[in-house]
Amino acid sequence: MIWTWSDVTARLAAEPEGTRLRLPRPLAQHPLDGGLTRGVDLPVGQRADFRLPCGDRTLCVQDFGTHYEAFLVGAAPPETEGAAVDAGAGAGALVALLLAGTREAALVGALLGAALGRRRG
Image (cartoon, rainbow, N blue to C red; front, side):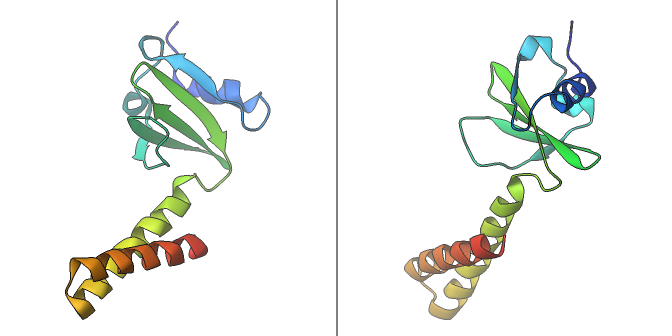
């Protein structure tokens, strides 16, 4: 049996919150073929992240090369905070670079921007 992401979503919906389903790659549909889109998550060894909105929840799939790990989260996927940190770091680095013109200032600006982005995210 080849798992589709609809099958995975239905299986996880019947499980307790926080359940992860591990699927060998040969036994699962590729996420892009199943309508998932690429996402960004905190790195824990995965090669890629994918997302699929499912009503009030989101199916999250991590590709570890040999297998996929799938789980459901509430309305906001985990990358929301990471996106705020990334945006803050980029903005901070740019402003510091424009004001001081050095790589060191850009690094400090990126760190401060990331910290502020984390507080807002």
